[in-house]
Amino acid sequence: MFKKVLIANRGEIAIRVMRACRELNVKTVAVYSEVDKNALFAKYADEAYPIGPAPASQSYLNMDAILDVAHKTSAEGIHPGYGFLSENAEFSERCEKEGIKFIGPSGKNIESVGSKIAAKKTMAAAGIPIIPGSENGISDLEEAKDIALNIGYPVIVKASSGGGGIGMKVVRKEEDLIPSIESAQRVAKSSFRDSTVFIEKYLEEPRHIEFQILADSYGNIIHVGDRECSIQRRHQKLIEESPSPIMTPKLRKKMGDDAVKAAAAIKYTNAGTIEFLYSKGNYYFLEMNTRLQVEHPITEVVTGVDLAKEQLRIAAGEKLSYTQKDIRQNGWAIECRLNAEDPLNNFTPSPGKLRRYRSSGGPGVRVDSGVHTGFTITPYYDSLISKLTVWGRDRNEAIDRMKRALYEYIIVGVTTNISFHKAVMNNEYFRRGELTTHFIDDHNIIAEVEKVIESEKEKGATLASALGVEDKKVAAITAAVGAYIRAGEGK
Image (cartoon, rainbow, N blue to C red; front, side):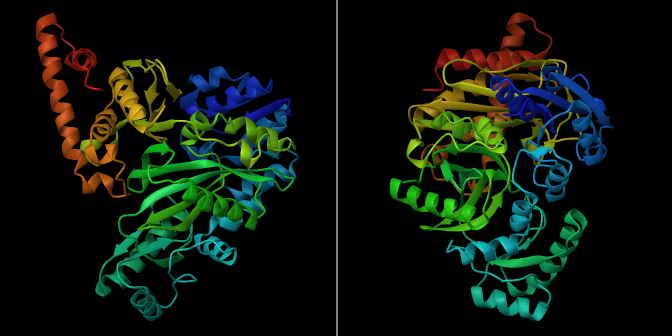
């Protein structure tokens, strides 16, 4: 095992990896930008060093600065967390050349699935179901018309590089195809320095289902169960659960076997995720993420597998601690990503200082966070405040527990999406597990968010009047907690 590891990330994921290191008696090194000097993750580490100004391009994406700190501190490995340099093939290769272990896949692994077009070809050759579409990038617009007509409208135009839904264009009629391709190419060029786009059949009412993968350097590969990640805004996940409500033992085995087969096709090593789209009884390979996922806590909660520790063990040259037969999904877990953003304003980020912060607790509740009262959510990075994860014996108990945990959570100083999560947990379609990636629009969840906010304002105004409290926002949140507990709304 390593003696010292540098974590090339920030916030809750940096703390998550440091906790795993501490349990394995591995010393940790944090790197931080100017605005993160006093952040919790920088204080939690055994050592911490500045690497540049606030913009990520000058700090958390600064390979030279990070590697300099690694050499200076004699760190034997670098864990990239997620985001930033976690799926950067060049950084993985540079670590290897400089004698530092990249705690993740090889640069070759990352490159092999970095292009969605190349990844689809690899998976098709391995016998994994793929969505019908163009085999290569679009270079001839007339040919693109023929491809779209052949697979049938609606179709979707996607950027071959990158992710997060950037550059995606849904096309429902022929006259919109060429403008959509040209627009997607411009966005892809600007965002990823690669204008390559391709066409796929657009799946109606799709569900986003993924399988966690672990693979060691001895050829052992397992999946660690399934996750449903269908509730998204702008193709970015907000709520995840494990297992998926539609999963059966037969379907899990089939999809899990294909996930393992997909990882084997590129001789993958370390933790990764195979993502599928499921529609009308069929599933198709979507992409592979070559890193630890944001939503990994729900897998850990239902299986008992510490994914961060397994990453460290694999990178240190050890064999997997588990076989496929060891993996059992026990109960149900749900994760809500609590962000500083305004759901009533298209989820626009809401940076600012946290005047008050109190997280939830109690049975079956896990909070992954890197903030505290007085901490400032800056506009430089993702707006994630924390990941709230709950476990229940079954899905209904998990939902009720999440509702209770959400009503206990207090964040004052920035607008958050807690009201959105409350609205979803109260939604009858969510309760029945009737999910798609269009869930928010299909069920007009934003209107339900408005009702949640208005209800809490009324409770807060009443309490503020009775108590003579001037800070109406604090009173509103306090009232919501009290009313929830008294009325038993979570039952």
